Structures are given as C-alpha cells and as structure tokens.
Length: 558
Picture 1 (tube, helix red, strand yellow):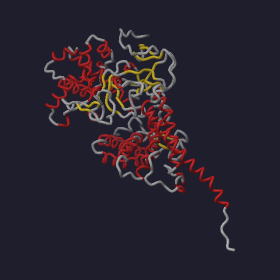
Picture 2 (tube, one colour):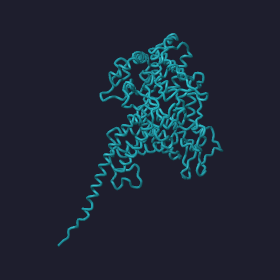
Picture 3 (cartoon, one colour):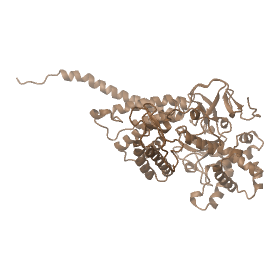
Picture 4 (cartoon, one colour):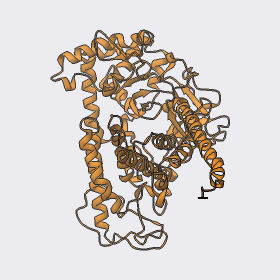
C-alpha cells in the first residue's frame, strides 16, 4: 500500500511512489513504465563528503575535479578545497561550523596521521548541523529520521565500530556531556544509536562519472530503494551538462532494464560480482538481513563468480569446492568434497589445492588493496605474483578473487603509464589485463551495466594509445597476437569505444547522453573514426597506384 510521506520527499517524481509490503517493507515502485536507460530519479543528496584522501583532489561542494587554475583551499582549516568562490560560498552554510570542528580535532590529534576525522564522522557532523539549521521539525530533518534504522537487529560484529563512531562523533562536536547533544535532537543514548544505524544502513558511495569512489553521501529519498543481487536499477553520478554546478553532485537512479508499472525498483547494496557467500556475509553484517533474491536462492549449477575451468578443457565450468568454506580456513579436508564439471561431469582432482589458491589469493588481494596508494610498487608485485597462481589453479576470468585482482592489477599498471618512460611491453600488458577483466565482467553483468560499460571504454582508450614501438605491418596480427598492432589495433579500439558508448547510454542515462564519460567516449570515437579514415584513404591511394607501377616494363639492353 502507498506510504504517507507527510509532505516530505517532494523530489519524488509522479512516475514513482513509495509503497510498503509485509515482505520487504517500504520500497520505490514504478507508477509508469520505465525503459532501460531512463533516468528514474535525479536528486542532489542531503549530505555528501569526500574521503580523507580525496579532500585535496576534489571540490568539497560539487565533488568535481580541479579546474585548470587548481582548487582553492579554505584559509582557516586548510583541509577542504573548492573549485571557485561560488562553490566556497555555497558550501559555507555547511562548512561554517565544520571548519571550527576540523581545527579543534586537528589541535587535539595525537599525530598527523589522524589529524582529520574519517568521512563517516564528518558526514554525521553535517547531518546534525544541517538538521539544526533547517529545523529539527522541518522537512529536511524529518526525511533523515524517516530512514530505516537497524537498531534492534544490530549484529555483534557491528557493536565495536558503532561505539567507536559514536565516541568520535561526540569528540568532533566538542560535546562534554549528554546535554550537549540535545540541541541536535539527541536526547538519549538510543537516539545516538538510531542516528548511527540510519547512517550506516543508508549511506551511498559517492563516485566520479567513471565510478571511482571519492566519498559518501546520504539521500533519504533514494534510501527507500530495496536490495536485490539482480538489480533493475543502478545509482550513478554522471555529471551532465544540463545540471548546474550548484546542483552537483547529482545522484541519478537509472533503469538497467524495462520496468513495468506496479513493479518495484530495486538496486544492489553490495558488489554483485562477488560470490553469494560473500554477498550474504556483507549484507548480514552491515544491513542485518539475508537476501532471498533469485540470484541467491536459485543459484546456477556453477556460479561463474566461483568457478573453475573443466580439467578436461571441454569448455564447461566446475563450482568451487565447499563454497561456504573456500574463503575461510578449513581445519580438515572433507573426503566427500567433490566438484564436477557441469557439462561433462569430470571430477576436479586436487580440490585442496584449489581452496588453498583461492584463500591465498583473497589474502593477497586484501593486502594489495591496503598498499595500493601507500606503496603501489609493493601492491603491483603482489598482484603480479598471484595472478599466475590463480590462473594456473583453473579459475575462470569471472571468478573471485581472480576478477578483483585483475582489476586491481590493471589500475596499478595504468599508473605506470603516466610517466615519460612508456614502453610497448607495459602498454600491451595493461591492455591484455583490461581485456581479461572485461571478459570476466561481461560474464557476470548485463548489457548496459555501468561497470561493464566503463570496462569497455577503458579497453578502447588503452587500445587507442599511440604505440611506442609498433610491430611491423607483416607481424601486426600474426598468429592471433593480442593486442594487435597498427591499424588493426585502432580498429579494435574503435569497435570497443562504440560498444562502450552504446552501453553507457543505458547505464548512465540516455537523457544525459551517458553523462560526462559518455561524452568523452563519443569524442574519442569520432577522433578514431577520422584517424581510421585517413588510414583507409592512404591504403586506397597505394592500391590505386600499384597497377600503374606493375605495368612498367623493365629496361632492356638494345
């Protein structure tokens, strides 16, 4: 039945409504048909903050990248940065009290490493200051309180993190006693727990148009969307030309497939490229529920997220052995733990070796991720060493942790392309890595999913990079070499970019032309088309000249 919103959530368009069901609670439902690629909802979040590492790289008001002249730093706290004076003025209503809080926090920090509070603390601070500014009984604050709280079903694993966050927030607000929290509408410890629970349950990742995480945000209207591991909609931040910079960051909810009137609009709260056991673990720990969607309850005989190639190389795949234990340490081997190819029924021999490879791969992935920005060379060494082990263990490109490690390896290799010492071997290796990642993603995500579209676009752009040492024309495509060289590489780049743009129109919204990334890919495609046209013209001219050369007779002696 429809939910009474009490005059709140005015940004909800007439084509949508909030309903409540006994099975899923409140959710967003389509009142009118939504086609794949349509922007279902476009809204500016109530609050958005940058992650600590991005505070000096993006604008704290619009979340945009630095302009040509660079970002302007707040002269008082020297922590947040802005595009220009307009962004700084617009953000002052938020930053006015934040500025003092940041200075006080830094002054009392035991070391420079913790001189800036984490993004959850800063986001919660803005929520409380915003509620106070807009009025505790106003629409803005009421919409915050309407968000779902898991206070009564918190998992024991969450107790410590929630407690630490509460203590950090109290310190950030310079609250000396419980009474100091009353002006923010927090009159008891239960109110504070509710606030933190609403925050952790309803926070969305803030990203660039290319899906790179930059921070977090809160949007109470979009928070009504329920979860499924097979979503029909996705959240993106495309940065459209039609949106004023003063309305950025702009959150768009985009349909991935056609949605009929009366159907619920669902998103995914977790990374759907993960195996079901890891998705369920995160959902239980963070959101306090177990997912019963079709992707979880009607699993395939072998989920490509946790699969091996058939040892007989028949083209079939085999499920991981003991999928509920493959990512944890097993005390003993199960003699009945047998896994077979779903196509030819061949048994996988050494399941223990597979489990060991997956477990070591997961540990290495976690370690490499922790070193990605602090010690990228060490992280690259880890991924370089572990990828061959996972591949030799028989994991398919879409299997975890091989897919995630391939992606991380690609990101680390791309960073090495930025310097002046670009060489052909490194460029070709990052292209092969991007191709493997793209193959894995395409096996998991539907056409038009933004992650899949971005992977295609990245591969196309890498293929379009000028080759430092292109192969001779005779060897450019010899023996099925990948990546090819010369014109064949440009042709493949063009085809990849065209496909990427088609999918971006779905994943990032047709109304906005695929967003900023869609425009960039379109422009790159046009440039490549011209370059290929020049090449074709040159080839045609050569072919036209060839017969005339062939008709010339060699000189003979009299």
